[in-house]
Length: 226
Length: 226
DNA sequence: ATGAGCTAAATTGTCGACAATTATTGCGTT
DNA sequence: AACGCAATAATTGTCGACAATTTAGCTCAT
Image 1 (tube, rainbow over the protein chains, first blue to last red):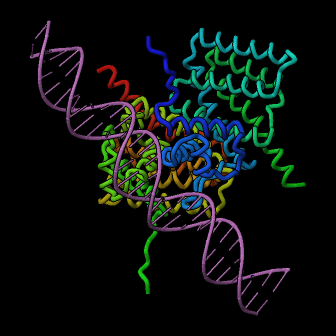
Image 2: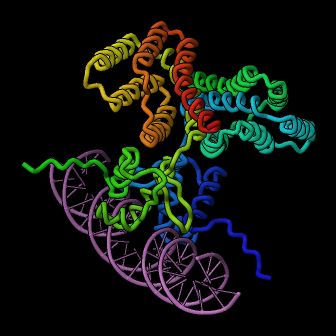
């Protein structure tokens, strides 16, 4: 019996891409910092060729910005840029939620319900850290987006925007910060989906995200007036 | 006097990226066809290194799909995928139009008006080809999106989705096919923006795009039932 | 004829070295 | 001491060659 080799990535460039992306989102490579090809190449034990390919793919994910003949820098999001992202997210997740309401089966809704119940018990427990808050919140949104059935929408939201959101949250240390309210809104959303009420589902999801956007707008105004 | 060298792109990889992208969108490299690194490299007179970087960036633009150890293929959109794109576009351009209504100045609205008047005269002229139809239509949407003031939204719609739309239209030979109706809808949208009616602007734009989406849905059903 | 298995050709992945550009350091002048 | 400039160091861009993998073609047995 041959050993089962867990082939995480077929190519070294792909492997480097995933690891660097994780390092950026995790905050190990701080936002705004310059990426040295030679340094990273030796760090991952690969040549500069595959590494450059990985960087080009990171650019496609909007996680780094490349300046020709100068180098790549990890993106650093300011508040106006984060607001731009939230505007897009509000629109797209509203769409996702409407589509989910149209297509979700009874089993799908039950799974969503169970997810929320898990979150509720976790909120009431003591070892509920802000990290799990964030991940729990993202779990819920991931599920909804996947239920939309629009693969490109899923790719766009979960494959691009969410990495940027994670990055921004880690950069500013901003946690969702209102777990009970968020859970309540999540429950309302699931109820609307279960009732197959497309319009209400979209409205509630947009409002849910708009409340997070408003926090950013307040922070921006606060920054401008002080 | 030294000759003025028009430095279109700083690097060969970037130059190749733009040229290949143009070739794909133009249809010179047909959808679904495989991309040979050696062939393209010699065609553009560069080495395989920069070419591979260009391909990785094309993957980021969703114009090619890469299979490790196999190669890159130009994407080939079927009707369900095109519908997915139109769903996203409907949502995002609705957002863009609402933002544009909120921010557009009187001069902006006047420029939009003049653009539509140019289109009107072109429609009534004889040498009005479907190619210019499409470009004129895109012109209008470009302007609106730019007026939204959301740079990331502009990047997303005009830098990614629109290339895919062009590709799909060229692949299927589907022209907008209702220039008078489209122009009328464009005029209504501009009027709503000029009145700073955000909700109506968003509604009209979404409806405008939804009508194109419906054409695709009809085609899909027709394909399924025949 | 058809299909499995092997061999060879073609294609992709990776590397190290060199060229070109940019960033830095140190010097000299004002 | 501050500024500009030149030489140098560091970094990015590019190339050609080799390794690894996939694909194509061929042989041979059923």
